[in-house]
Image 1 (tube, rainbow, N blue to C red):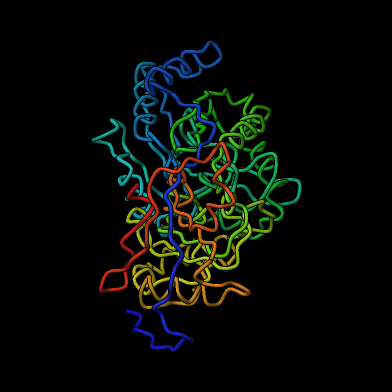
Image 2: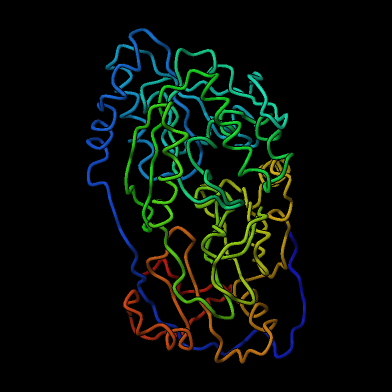
Length: 433
């Protein structure tokens, strides 16, 4: 356990904060009204029907990120495969997640309700892979042995902007095939080249897998700014390569953002791997985590992260993007999970530990008092729950004055004073509104 730190700051920790106001941010929202119907419609398209034959063993690749309605999507896919007279098996497709162990990846899927009892298909979790080829640059391409030896592969993944690189293919079906099904050895292999090479390597390696492995189709999931399923599209393997860039562009149009674009301090209630691969999404906050890319986020001087989500199981990947964290957060970190993730990615910055303060009160005070040219009582502060749930945020009065006439902002409560309990914990949070 990290021991309390006694450090003196000028003026002490009892700072006079400006008043705050809860506001609702409005974003473009598309939403699938019935998940089961949407999937059935997609899987019964002419270009998908007939791809699965009776008695075939079909590997369904499922990842570990917090995809909305993942259990329902996987359930419907498994039911469809069963209706074809085939035999579905679930393959964890999550690279080095879950501590880079077979049991860790099985547990991660179970946390999302993906178990044989819930889904109706066995979960075959193994880190065993085979090399199936190389790219023109010499990158070896690995794939889960069970998946490769099956009669067909179906890959399910969300298509979204990546948190560490920019390209025509970012997070999506190709990346799931290359890194997810590549398990720890495959993820380590491609990450050794560096994220700056991903925009070329992902499509190169993805094309080799599509040409070599028995990929039948992909189920692409797009989500809206409220972390809901915006669209589901089934794509036959021979069209994934051409179709995915268009889906990525569509996914970007649905993304939320922090509407205030310039302020002093960003306070984040929680980070976690189910929220973003980097704990909090650089596409939202504008700070690189594992990244070589530039992200067009808001400008601010300091950031504070208060806590980890329960679902992240101690993996604090992305904590290095913060300037200040709490001792409570630090004591929740599972360094095995965190370091396995960071070392595999070859980018260690996201695992670095920021300044650690004893309480949330102290963390906020330090962040504010280390801002340059800022009167704390008039500071511009934005307080968000996390980078997925951005509908409701708290903003200090000086921030509100700059955005209150924006048509995408609605004031939803009275001015309030941020207060702390006797342990220094904030009593007002965006998640309360």
